[in-house]
Length: 548
Image (cartoon, rainbow, N blue to C red):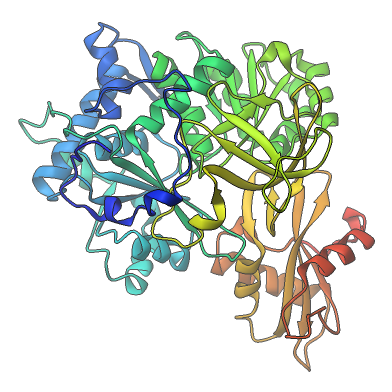
């Protein structure tokens, strides 16, 4: 570890013990970074210094920012953070906004000032926002003025949050527009100072905070971005994942900024929005989930997407049928990949010339992967087992005992079941835990259960994922109702609406099955594996679902 540039030592103090870290193999990956490193200097200021400040950095509805424009806004927000809001290096800042130019400027301003960015999904409700606020001891938030209601409600649950500054409505903009705020010297941070905390749901439903360094943001650019994606400065990146997901942060911001390309940011990026935006902005690189590619297939003829040349699919398993249908209609092979918030971005994929339909791919150059049995021993090729990976990035949870489960012997154990074939390609089999991956979103079954159990009509419930042709998986809830409640369509809608109002709407159960009892162990624990077996045995057609 280098001399930290942080004044607030919370993140450094909250790192797991050194003997629980994964092997972080920078030299083996061919990477070397300066001891003193602020990632914003590399990703934005370097383009200004090289005379590329007039290149387009961000395109959005009615907005066209050059790198010089972006740098100016970053500097002004950084000055506001330090001079007006008292930010010190190492302090955490919660960010809440849809994908937008101002979110990127605010994110990079936090990093340039030496702070630690904690971006959150716009759809999260008060209770879901309160957890990262308390876990990361966040006292300051920058929030899109349209998304204040839930954050203000979260303050009652997380009194640690002392100040919210809004943007888009003039508050932050007014502070930015002060004389002398045009320039800002980047904080003297070390390459291994924490710069972001990415929160991700786990099988217990309690999110895990993953700590990432300044150098990590460059490492994913210089491994996956440079060696697999192989985009160029003339490319224009577009996609659907929120920047609160590290998949979105890398694919829509870090990768283009590393090479001086342009990012196209959409506040609404569902399939109906993505296709016209690709046509309007002449996007060339697309990042989204298999579900979105499937949904766009029927509408491809309505829009000119001839500008596309690279399409990346991640967030859930890519069905071979989707790969083949997309290639047949566009001529573009989908680049599958698997990543994890713990690893920051994609670590298994294949360059376009080496793609094999149905396989996730090969370890990204700079990373190693192997398949292990339950005892931690490598298994022969062709044998399913637990996926283990190591490279220049890796898991460091924020003060969380689950670190010891995710990292074993220096390897990151991702929670996925894979097999490797004789030629070194990795083939996805299933999730090893209870996570439900639906349309690219990670949904923890126990969190949905906890929400349903707050409804007075619900006596017991169990939640699992079931296969779905459109979304990959959907959330199914098995529910035991309290006496006197009818198991009809009206009840289903009430329960679905209840979950949508309580937690992020995408987590609601699209399928509800009413049962007299749930399978349990002798000690009374829910047997989710038995629910999954029931779900597979009851593969009802879509039209039979009681979903709204």
